[in-house]
Length: 308
View 1: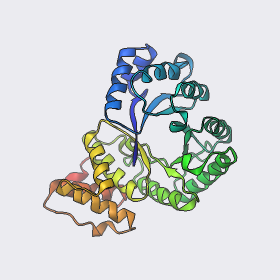
View 2: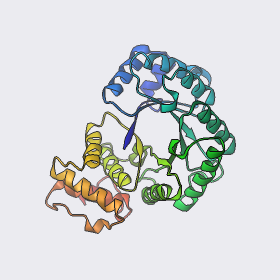
View 3: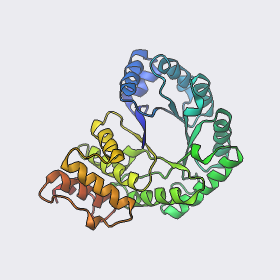
View 4: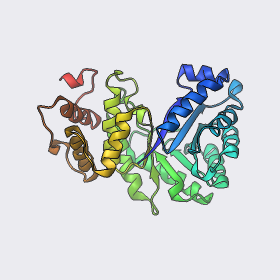
């Protein structure tokens, strides 16, 4: 499991203002803190990068290059900004373009750019006509269209990361399960296999603040069981990063870890959540199980679901 550190993004009002004002010390500080956590990539999210954001990726890369050699995920829909970033990347072939959709104009631009630099490419299973399909079959169809274009551009499947786009459970509970099913289908449908990724924090977006870390951790474990290869995640969530290692090495340190491993095995082996073994007298283990039930749409989500 590879982690893409999401912690520099213009969704944050503070970060957006710092970037617009070219606050170098702010950016240096956050990049340094991310680098100390040793993610596999650092995501530089500058959105569409229009108007006052022009030239932002070059500025960010000039700062980042003085701090770390960690590869970058260039997170913008502006291909000119991506080009500027890749031109400064120390190892462009290790970087990621984040992202394309199935819309042909955007897809052709990004696949040609990824092929030119040998870069990894995140592809969203959506287009402007359909939006995000509710069913996993429709998402897979879009993935196949994208893969065909990517292949024609000379991009190997191992460089292609599909994002099935998880929606917040407080908006549509059914979609967490559809995302998990799509991950499975993506891993089974291509030869050679493609990669998969998710924007992890999306699943808990809009939920009560105190619930979000648990929801993110449980969903990531479940997604790993379905074959997830990477996640755009909060690299400052130390417990999340620890749990990833526990799953990867099958090395439980606590009774809760054993519950996470059991949940991972159930998802990996297409088991039933009802068979999850855990200590029902443990509030923390019960919380893991209840969260999995919410994510699989077996119980109705509310901000008080843990108390039910």
